[in-house]
Amino acid sequence: MTAWRWLRRQPLLYLWLPVVAWMVLIFYLSAQPDLPTPAIDWLDLVISSTAHLFLFGVLALLWARALGQQRFAWPVALAVVLLYALSDEFHQAFVPGRHPDPWDLACDALGAVLGLGVWIWLQRR
Image 1 (cartoon, rainbow, N blue to C red):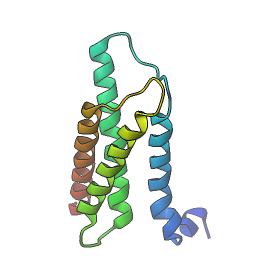
Image 2 (spheres, one colour; image 1 turned 90 degrees about the horizontal axis):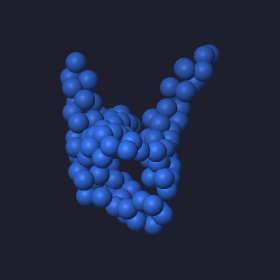
Image 3 (cartoon, one colour; image 1 turned 90 degrees about the vertical axis):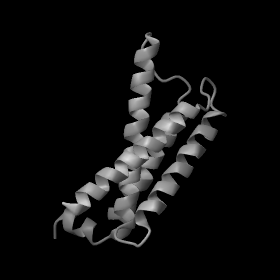
């Protein structure tokens, strides 16, 4: 039996390990007091916003994948990701050099919606 087959037979690992690992990555990045940023303000905003869109879009996609075909999978995935985004901004209030930002929260929410849109699109193909 190959490692891939074994992994697919372990739903807790196959479905939920990517979700937990991605959430840990977001938490780790959020806990960094001084992430490198470009000196140009507008470029920093574009890079930061894009990063938030990507990170939370992938998280929403992973949650939808893990929840599968359950009746309320997409709304639950969206709600959980939005709560995690809110907790991420709250967490940043306690990290030196970081602060909560409503713009980041808006980018997180948009990323989650886009990620779920990609998941829905993939499911219908």
